[in-house]
Length: 262
Image 1 (cartoon, rainbow, N blue to C red):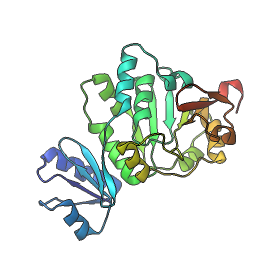
Image 2 (cartoon, rainbow, N blue to C red; image 1 turned 180 degrees about the horizontal axis):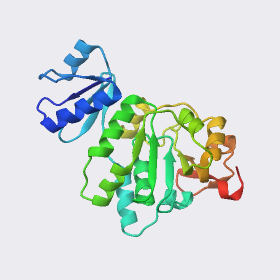
Image 3 (cartoon, rainbow, N blue to C red; image 1 turned 135 degrees about the vertical axis):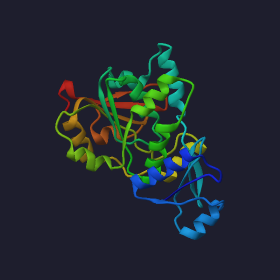
Image 4 (spheres, rainbow, N blue to C red; image 1 turned 60 degrees about the vertical axis):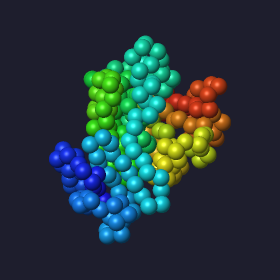
């Protein structure tokens, strides 16, 4: 993967790009006014992260470009600030100070809401196995600015890790995380969205395994939560007997550890 900047970039953007490339052990390339297509032809690497003063972008010659944006999490956090509820936080019984492991980070939207929910005493660890998506979201969470300071703080507190949830869960001690959350890529998309379609091109499409759920039940102190389509057979296959069905197309299944469902 290549990491570069825009044609005209500040010293700060160059430093961010160089630091990210060093951390991820990727190639940093000075732009030198080359077009993106020219960089592809020179370096023969289709995956490219471009860091600018305004945003971070992922580009690929055969895929739609993506940029980091908090998306619906911004709306959800503003609702929480007004005293409204968030179904995901309610179903997971999130309390200030909780530790949450988001096993399928995607674009980070749910992780942001969890981070706001657990507050400054809590902790959110967000896992992403695909390197381009990890780089885009990790850097975006650290640099994206909104006009809501509580939102900015929630994004900065998230700890992103480039690792598969299978490998990470196997290494965690028993009862070391309060809530473990899975939001796997749906087999059939619910809507035609350019952002979600781009995510589908980058995301890991592997189905959740029963072994991963067993490890999650071992590691969680409070609950394991699965987000899926309303009529998904995944809840039954993976042992989620408590399913919160509602009129929405999205449904959450919960395994309550406190209720001896482990």
